[in-house]
Length: 434
Image 1 (cartoon, rainbow, N blue to C red):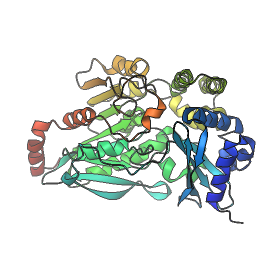
Image 2: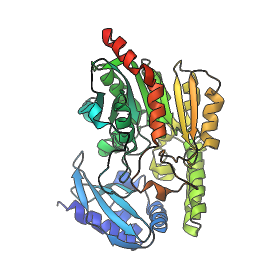
Image 3: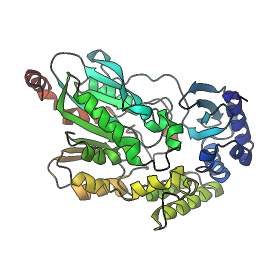
């Protein structure tokens, strides 16, 4: 019997609002039950409600079809101090295959002032092949000659090509900012967003699987465009995208260099503890203390020699499977980057509490800071998304409509193709495409 997904989604939000988490768990499909429990849902829900305040309104669900007979349903929730969106993947029988608490969906994104839209064109592409292919966008500067290019990688999570978070689109800011400055850009939806059902059926799925095949495909796609200099295609990664960028360059030696934005270098399970403690200190209470204790316990399992691909995902941080954590645990992004003979630009927000100057940038500086082809810059006012602000950073400051610091865009553009030389380089490359 088919069940209306919007009806199920509305019921889930109602049950969560009444604290009936065990009843919500009964709606979980087996694969979701393996990674999320009623207890972990309770902690996540109560933490979010403490942030936004008592719930004052629940909006109408909106839905869109995704793969494998699933429908993605989003339900807006308004509290006294803020908002969130409950996002679910629902099948025809009414079972939940995905459930996450996301930033609110706000008004339509407006381009930043530094986006010169008339200076470039855009077109849609398919990135990758077969059942796990995803959609993407390529932005090509107008005019004659060929241009340097860059492939963008979003942070961890089921992000779209723009790294949409509420009404903000950090990667679209970057794409439009760079394309208007004469740099070709490719960006794509992560496979975990496009094919959540297929990924859930892959118990051996890792960070490498999530990023590398599609990143390499996007690099090659950009290199094949007649308006792009094939030898001048870079990779730019934000957060986890920055962490994995050195592995992408190792897999595709033609990459010209790397731009790493707020790239985490510390072991992610230990960073999760640090972030949980930071957030708990912002909102002291028994629930947040319980969340910290749960994350510590989960992180200890990641560090344990007993971790295996069969370790239940529900017992590990973020509900990621054992194979994913084994891959992460065995990967040193700084050492991988140091082994590359490629220039790098490493950028960090000074107010970032997720990836920090003290815990992450220090590792990049220790491993790469003496190299003359590595440039490292800190933007004191910027947070994890490179949005400028003041005072201690917190999750609520991500919600208002805003854009990436224009200084960051300008510095990336000048590093990829120094402004005075762009026209000359384009003319030279136009004579003989490399």
